[in-house]
Image (cartoon, rainbow, N blue to C red; front, side, top):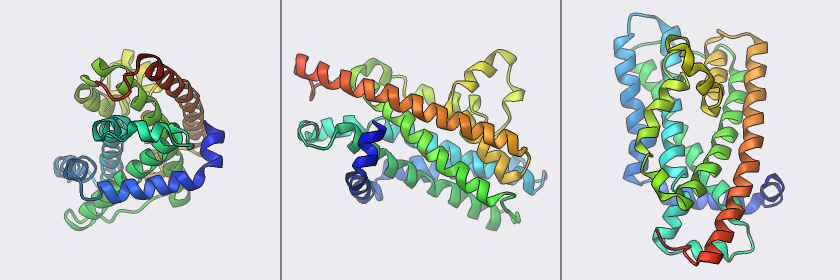
Length: 264
């Protein structure tokens, strides 16, 4: 899949641009990537308003991460189903461009759009609550953000075909949102959770993304910790892309055999 995406960078960006044009005014996506993270940020900042700017930065980054995860779960996860509901999935499958490349472009647009929530949370904390926010390590934070986007896109490429091939899994879509908020340490450290949940956190790419972003935004982590988090993000991205490539092949083979590509 890496080779397909690399050699098809023009279709990727074309699909991303078209997806942004289609979703920029979608009310559900606006609520998912902007309104809901802002509500979480407002409530958290109000409760922690006397804790100082360091906590504010943690909350701002964490609330932005909730927007990223919600976008991945609901928007990227349904990126193939939306085409099926629209009656365009068969056409996309018949194109010379591989379907996984098209979905990669759609996920890129959705994750990029959800980054708006982090910027909005920053502005809200700075102007509404009067916090003088600043990034302790802006360069490292930028690298962490790029790796986070890659990890989320790769994870979304797994979720999308699973939702298509196993509609029963999609019924748990809402139930998967808040547990990941908690297990990934978006808004508070996982050290506050029971010890048996820690291995579950380590298996989640969003946890390593949150760890890298929190450490570089507040300066609370060492360079070794940041580099380790980057390594885990790259590792999970590679694993997810390999798994996703296999899932897309299984989905298309199953569709051609069962002739149920456009059916629920």
